[in-house]
Length: 212
Length: 163
Image (cartoon, rainbow over all chains, first blue to last red; front, side, top):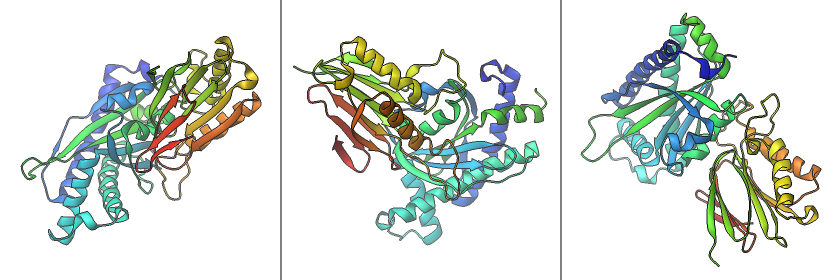
């Protein structure tokens, strides 16, 4: 495995571009699901100390809704779709109203059902993100069933620390934000996609893109 | 006397004289290990991330791994006046934040491995583990008081458990 700290600007840029392609596809899929415009931020490639992951993404104690999937195909990575708890609730409400009509009593739906809706949103976003990357790299696309969690940000991000912690002290992440447009005044729904490439998969990615 | 508090970050390890409150926020698969000697009035906490330091350079923080954190914290306790036979331990954390049906990956079950390794290391050093709140799928925030030697464990949706 190559040392993360030794990547040059061109290589980091290539990783960012991969994130860009994934984000575009994820935004299109989410837009189709919700029938709304989706605004996407330009992705960032970030080297983050595994000791500061919690702080890096906001208040470590804030409650977030997160969907996690694992790529089992040629490009090995993990992906998290992470939202503030309120944003996740609004996203689920939007999806359920869209599917079943505006009179559905969203507040009375059991959590298993809303979690199922949330995991579906996450699954579609992350799977589209990954699919675009696999197309680009020519790697096989295979993805795990999604897992959902609602918890403190720093607890959720322990999973990143446990992937990168065994190799060193820095994680390389691709981070991007999607935002649903055209909501009622005062409402906002956004979500972060975090790509956590397996340390070994980075080399494959850079080789395929001919920057290594 | 009021207790000041210290918040430990990931992989931090600290031993302090009473009175002080030791806090770790948002433990997921990580472990909060507490050791104390109530007679010598000294206590320590470590925020352990992974079970095993194998294959890693010696420059890593000792608090990061169960196999290095346990011996280091006991040694520090002895230096600060604790007596080995009086040292007691409590642990919290080691949750599995995400379960992917039909899939078992090393990093998903790291919480349980952290618990097992920490307990095994304590046993090997002859340290009594007197209380634990581990496993499950929820994150925990912990506070250890050196005035009553109790560990408060807060879990989202489940309130506070004192062990």
